Image (spheres, each protein chain N blue to C red):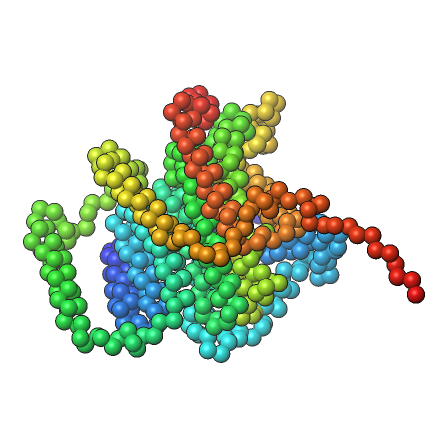
Length: 199
Length: 365
């Protein structure tokens, strides 16, 4: 009873937030709506007892990705009106993509759900069930190669991102920390004996 | 006296009957509300007296008095400050985003309080004994940055915006080192549950605390905690000399007060988490000392956690009174180029120690 009420409350806020992301005039508001949407979907996952996924969603997307996105959006001076100019011209492509996504989701939910019981609430797990442990034992045994390949691809992305921004620019000023630390008082301070002026 | 005991017994019976008649859901909510009050009310009092002690202790360290006028030795000073802040007018700057400007202090405060749900206070008392407690703590502390960013952006002020940018970059940088340090704790404790992590440190003596095998991670975690809460010597986000007061420069009255409470609640949280992860939480440092085994001194209790938290709180003030502020590039260098490599190396060392069963991984400790 109460989980059902909570489910509909979170789902309703999630839909409103997702709608807000695409309709908000201010890009910062749109980004904040996206944060709200992430938090609501994490709450939905918590209701399904997938606490590891829910918390990692908040940790990665809300705590890191959206902070950086917000960072960028705040720095850019985006003019919303110019962004909306091509709206009518491209609306049919957007509509087509939306239709495709809707058909695919419908296909998954309606045609492949036989025997999978998508629409019924799953049985609650026993109290000592740990979602994290279960996920870890599957990830590190059955899917260990896929997991490691994903990790290597992510590492590649990190290295690539760093190389893209690490170009040598002429006139770049940088601190040499080793030199700064090695400095002694005698290098910087010179004590001068000044004769008092006599008048 | 008979009528009195009779009446008390009667009331007790009636209350028990009322309690039993309540639906299970209502009972659950009432018990949890009570638990939350038991944590939050002392937390607010601790925040109030943390501000007082901060001013007194830094005063003593710097050879001056600090506030000593309101009440005996100034003990009522926090309440005087609170009343002053409550009665000040709430001013919203022109061209500020009104909704977000007013929302930001609340967004800063909520994660700072919500994390306390997973922090075990003693062997038996924790509001929510959740499996993924360590991840929950990480997720919520990473949400604290939103209050700062929103405040800086919504104020429509360059100083506030610069402060928010500095703060956000700093928090994102140190969060990684903090997360890696906690990976080490997770490996040693073998659980994500904070209570189980403390129980894993239970042993013959102080030497079974994670402080010793994870000493570099302990240093990294606590220093990153100081940086995450934007405290001196990492307080460039406030930077009085350059950007006035940073992200909360446009706030006055209770809006400023909420940011203040959030900052101090976060500081106390860092002390509690450091004690839990590395110093055995509620465990007594005198456990296993001959002659004390059966006394209260060797018994685990909330008092020991409080003592450890008090020590780390003092460290926060000590740092503030002692160190000059870091330059911004030095902060970034320390976070990215020093702490993250240290934590990664120590995780590898831990892997070797676990493989060869050295230290806490040895059977029988």
